[in-house]
Every structure is written in structure tokens, then in C-alpha cells.
Length: 273
Image 1 (cartoon, rainbow, N blue to C red):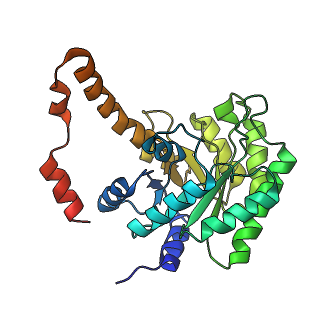
Image 2 (cartoon, rainbow, N blue to C red):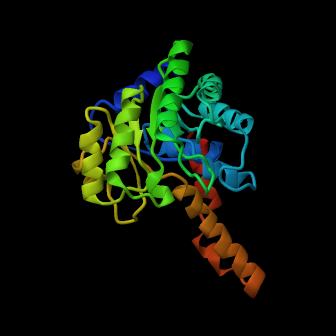
């Protein structure tokens, strides 16, 4: 059966209706297809993972680059893909809307917009402007006539502003502006997470796994609807690469290869996709 983009979008929205699911973050076609084969129900792009795969730092890729990447990912998998669309690649709401319109055309099922400016001296957009940017993204999606979910991200915790009340108020404002799902990467304690779940209810809360001790069962028990891993899978892959390459360069030995995946196993996994 052929799975259409509309099918993916409908399935993605249903995933957010109840329960809790993990939405892992592939950085290329191979990782996307392997994750699909493992039984995950949806995928999300990762700005950092994609940037590193092209030899660049996170937040140093262009909107055109990301759009091309999203098009490739969406075509490579039968699963719905949520786009890590950073800050929309524009400061003003009009620019965000224009870029969101282009993103919808890639085949994505969801799209996240964050309130981070990328500037150390003023890391977060003014709250009023941040809300206008979410509203503009919502209007742009609606104007396309496609059922793409909008995720609004509050980045305060990642920039050292660990004010839960401010974070909750921003997420509530983003929800009122049209966000379908709310996301505050960096929250990590049960009290923080449960507070945000309650604040944005009945809309779903996305949580980023920032602590290795977090489990799906525990986050589900807190009321979390979906769980992201961000660039962690990409970082895990790079960790193995770095260990092996540094051993060769520094010691002239190859013992790290003992931990490598077997070529036959990988060939078999990709043949099944």
C-alpha cells in the first residue's frame, strides 16, 4: 500500500492524542531507515546531527540546506517526520511565515519553531515577538491547507534561564497562538515536567531526554506525550568514530574496531528496508 504525505500527517496527529511515544532523531537517510525498521512510529530531524554530517557546527546551515535535507528525509521513510526548523531562519514573523510555507512543501508532518535568537547577548526573542512568530507560523501552515502540526519551543533552560514560571507562561502563550505541541528542552526534574504538563494541558508536552537516567515509562507516568532525543543518537555515533580514529592516530592500534557493527548485520538491516 502506498503511504501518502496526507497519511503520514494524519498518523502523526493521532500519535499525539493519547499515550506517550518516542520520536528519535535521524540525521541522514540511513539512520532514518534503520529507525523505521526498529518499529518507531515517527521521526524528527536534528539540526545538530544534520549540521555535523555536513562538516558544520549546529545552527550554521542555511534554510535552503535544511529544506533540501527535509525533502530527502521525508522521501526516504514511510514515517511522519517532524522538522527541527530552528528559529524559522528569520527574525520577523513575515520571514518565519515564508520559510514555514516552504517547509510544508517538503512533506513534513510537523515543524518546530524556537524562541532562541542564536545571539549570546540576547539569547531569547522578546516574549511578544516570540508569540507573533508562532502565530505567523500557524497562519502560514493553515494557508497551505495541509495538516502539519506546529511545535513551539521555549529555549530558556538551554540558555541558563531556569525560571519555570516564565517557561510555563511562554508555552501557554504559544499554545494560545496556535501551537499544537509544546516543548521546553532542558527541563529535567519530575516537578518541572509535571508542572509544564499541567500548564499546557490538554495540549501535549514534548520532553528532551537530557539525563541518561530518564526512562520512557517514567516520563509517560508524568504525563509526557512525546519524547525526543535531539542530537544524542548522532553524538553517540560520532563518539564511536572519534574513539576509533583517535586510537589509530595516537597509538597506531585498532582495538576499537572490536566494538564496530558488523558489515553483514548492516547489509541485512538495510536490505530489509
